Image 1 (tube, rainbow, N blue to C red):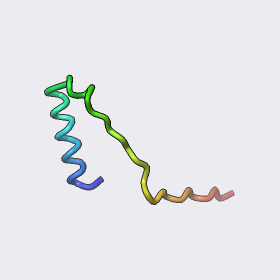
Image 2: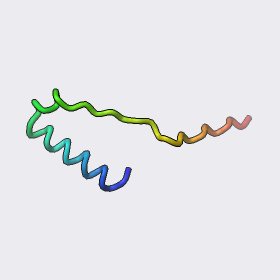
Image 3: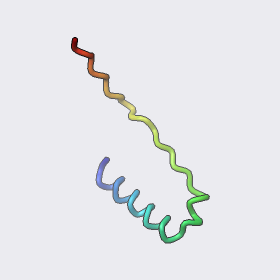
Length: 44
């Protein structure tokens, strides 16, 4: 996660701690990676 996103999420969490009633009005959607990593083949 890049530094800007991390700082933004930390700031959002601080705001929610100060005003927990806002949590009912916020929806966070987490999208999967656009380029999923390939699973490593099992070596037997």
